[in-house]
Image (cartoon, rainbow, N blue to C red):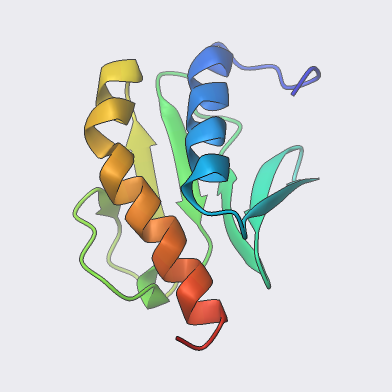
Length: 110
């Protein structure tokens, strides 16, 4: 994160911590010059060019089981979650945790 250059860096860090705390199975790496969350594959990456908000791209978000209204997109593969502020993150924190858990459970075949 020290080299991550983005005006939303503090909010990115808050989202990062929320994802990492959501499920002990989640790990992270750097891909595409941004933090990427992994568990038996890529779960999500920050979109580094988003400057007005934090944009978290769920690589195969369309396949994550469950109803997640904050995930945007209608395509067959990816979904995006935008976080506009610390208050918005707080409002979406339960849903974000559910997304991470659903991903991990799916990857484990549950």
